[in-house]
Length: 425
Image 1 (spheres, rainbow, N blue to C red):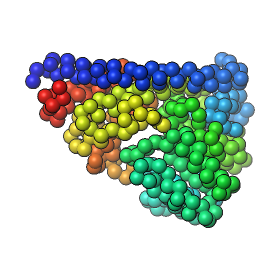
Image 2 (image 1 turned 180 degrees about the horizontal axis):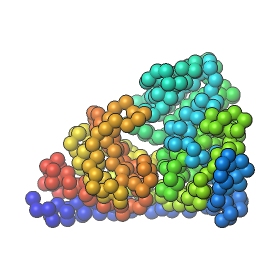
Image 3 (image 1 turned 60 degrees about the vertical axis):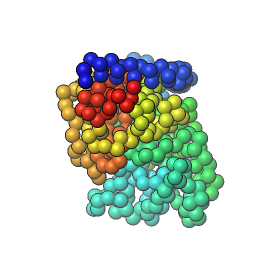
Image 4 (image 1 turned 30 degrees about the horizontal axis):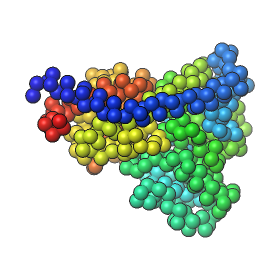
């Protein structure tokens, strides 16, 4: 078939889906105003000035820029205290620091959202041994599977709370699972239920990919502690590295004592003069999150129109930035990931191949030519290379970029003989 015909069809098809989602996109755009107002209020109340852009060297003791960033993030996240640190290498690192900082030998950790994200398996001790996992330190672990509809199994939770639990862990995002992301209302329900049964039990939420997606954050509905990455939502695609923990002041301090050392806690650590990028990224993040959500709706709309199963559905309620598409075919998955890579601003000439990545059990196929390595908020398409070959698309700084990537993916699928154009028109 003539390549120009395929290009015209791909462009028309994506545009038609986009037009059908205009009302949804408008609502996503309008939602930026209250979230941005919250961010601006935090900046104003903390009297942010250019003098906060510089950071100290050495130990970083008394670094006012670092301290004011912590206070701004705490306000935005509705938390008593926050610690935003470039010394956290990832969201997983921040979560691990919180787990090791708060839990003690003999404590019970209970996960209520099923098996945790793969990078936490070795932290907990579900894989590997002798590396200093929670289990190596005598911390007991148990998990409750989600119900078939993706909701939390409160009947099993009630049984589990019959014995003392130090911490209940909630993974907000779907991660690499075919399940819906938990909403803030669902997180609120979990926290209220746990605290009613065991007032001293800590509710810890993995907040990665979920920040600013809804009008409220987990700490505002009962979560005692949360953590997430700065190269996801809150970094606004500008923060070059780092992560955060937020929540009750005593718990945040314990997490920081694990990151640094007891006695230093949150009082040490320079920001390497990255304060401006962190603050500017937070300022931009409400708009970036909205654009990513609009892009996710477009991905869902395009692939569902071609007969693929998607989660969430286009225009559906979203609790994070992730759009899952069940492709069911390794060749289709490779083509789509390579198409997204080809439309990336960095490394467009590369062809993603399944490969091992630290923290994951199986090979991953990852497309994401981003300015900041691993910054899924810029735009990424990746998947565990195993059946049923589910593609996870994240981020997108502007909807036009997602359109271009989808146009390329459709064109490449047709030219590779993996999508029959006649069946789509």
